[in-house]
Image (cartoon, rainbow, N blue to C red; front, side, top):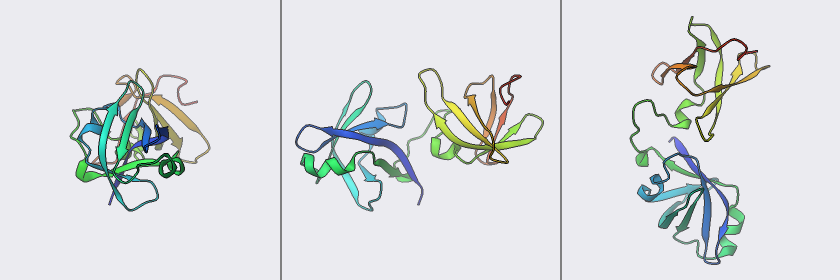
Amino acid sequence: MKYLKVGVITTTHGLRGGIKVLPMTDRLDRFKNLEWVYIEGQDKKWLIKDVKIRPKDVILELEGLDTIEKVEPLKGKYLLTDEDQRQALEDDQYYVSDLIGLQVHLMNGELIGTLTQVIPTGAHDIYVVKSIDEKKEWMIPAVKAFIKDISLEEGKVLVEPIEGLLT
């Protein structure tokens, strides 16, 4: 089963087991549609009792986590869900988990490396590409000027870098 990282627990919230979550999505309302989550390293589904969306994070209350002592050891753990709760995306939107591992090609078809990380920023994401020989790493802004096509079916990304971007 393929798990999707939806957030990371940053700290506790209050004394009754609330958790602050740094979302790994740009659609925070997604948390209101989740019924449950997994916590990294555990097989148990944790039912979501309450969701509060704030400008920079989300506060969750999970059934069975009702004290600060139970939540404290979970700091830094990822919250995961599976594809059963995956929301449909608009055109030209992708789940980060689907992008990681795609082969990155220049417009002429030359393979240059693998997409290893997506860094969210305020304006647009940054795609981190590791070279084939794994000696270099490039950061390519995820904008149409550079990212010409993404094909999940073919497992590749087509890029058109400007001079100096891949040096």
